[in-house]
Length: 273
Image (cartoon, rainbow, N blue to C red; front, side, top):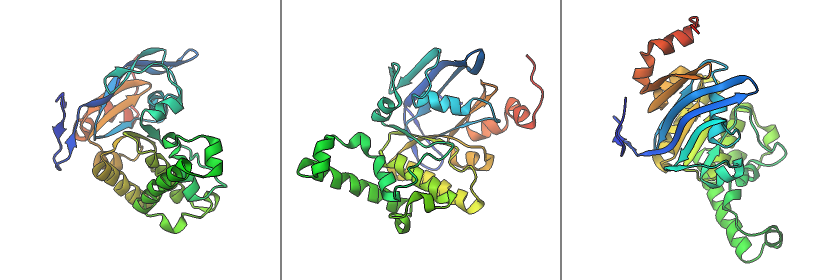
């Protein structure tokens, strides 16, 4: 297990920093059902951190706790060393945490560019009246935010569809547009909920390349849920494994790959209560 408090250097020369997000003894209940059972793990600055597990393991629930959509009944969420109080999702976004969703959540009638621009909302300071007049500070702010959106569009290689309504795009490109919107927020922590679900091999290769490039070029810390184990093992610095709401593994890809509890969970071995 990696335990360097101040970070470490990966085998390919990337610098992983100190802990930026820590989940301590998180328990989440829905009525009498415990979706998450006393789970602790952390996310380090600059790393790609995967959360994996069979269907129904509680992975998306955990991502929803991190992003503020769910409030755990027990445990603490610490962000940059400070315990986070109960916050609404927009307040979490203002802290520099952005996300994509398992089911695509875009504005279908709007163009790709306009969808990406919505990712800049937390950076817009002028009021609605000023924006409507589009004069002075509002005009400068709009121009600056548009420049960021255009850079993200170029980075994700979707220039050719920038003015296309999202409803007309194929599934794989919609996933890329949703990634662009999240990245436009310039997050310090980016949460990706099954970014490659439903994609073919070529689309997965493209998405993997973009995730590694975001991490490398922008220094974006990434936490992702993904079912494709080949992708997880290739992309991730560390992996936390959940099963039936419990944590059954946590470590490097090699450590997780050789963890007997993880092997049993994916092979469907019966659980002792």
